[in-house]
Length: 465
Image (cartoon, rainbow, N blue to C red; front, side, top):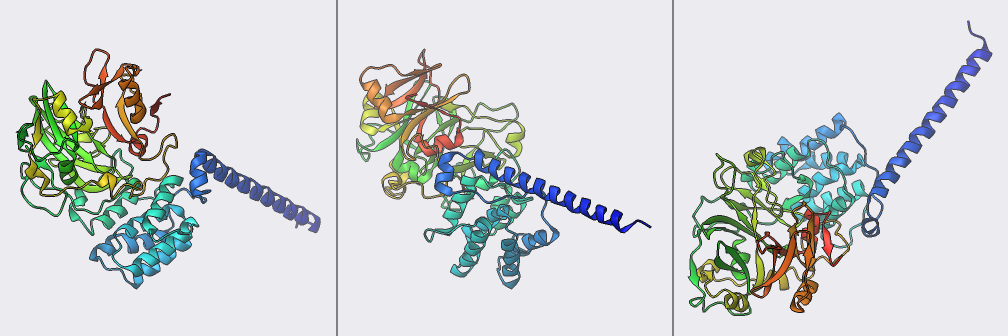
């Protein structure tokens, strides 16, 4: 039998070992938190504050059960009751900030003030935040994006369950891929999944225009000279896409200069782009681009009607589905944002979309709805420019993205100054700015708000340097 002295020494050694372990764990925890905070840019900390501690690893069985109750198959009835309230209580008390992503997703589709209050209280506990106004979902999502809080395990499965409560066709959209599903949210409209070439078929969606009717410049008497248009040239053929029409349609599948094009317009980003949809791998059917009704950090999420493959709207590469597996990346034609009077004067042979495509509407979201900044969550924004500063963005031959600050670029070009970056040269074209090679070839640039370009090209260069 061991002596009392031996037992005492053993106890003291165990106490000492436990103390050392506690100190080590506390130090590692502090270092982890400090590292997380250090990784965030100073402007993010200034705006959103210090992020909460974020655990790693799997969830407990109790939390998985709560998630299944609140966001799993049990939610398919679309009813929210005492069982879900109890589950949210369990989720909130976990203090796991990762779960706030799912609570935020539910907030986006919440149909009652009472449910919104329950969910808002939950995100306050999970993130230790206070709301500045009644936009609980927007505030929460901005915090989550800004802090870059990781998603919880099985996030996509739960998110699909939530979102298909309102649009069941999204079941084919929410698939694994090279897309950050945390940043995807509902834009307030349904999916456009009408068959190709059904431009006039009504839908509860933003209706794309397929093979749109066009007129000559001379016959477009309805379009004012100061109206904004998006000008495109392919193989010497010119066409203008009036903003008035694009704000109604947001997507056009067209043929110009013998080439097939898909032309998305994101009203929230002030960006029209033109993608060649006939230059795809062998065996791939021409992608028919459609508006999904979803957004990713206030930019439209477009998809291919044939395969339901999602595309990165700014980069042109398929990020989910069959076309992602086949590594489809669409090349761009340049888009010049300008006034109709200037465009038709520079290119008198131009055609223009027919007035009927506007459906009798005349929106100007830029100067009305979106005038005070993005209306959907975007998280942090590169502080080098203001969110709504106009830029012309293009990717150089080396793969380096660059944004040219539009007002300064126009001033320089009007004064006959040369603007070049690597293989890129900016020129005036029909009252707007176009990115070409030094030999004059189109490089596929387009205009956009700074917040949108810098989000999708976070490593972008900015001119002036």
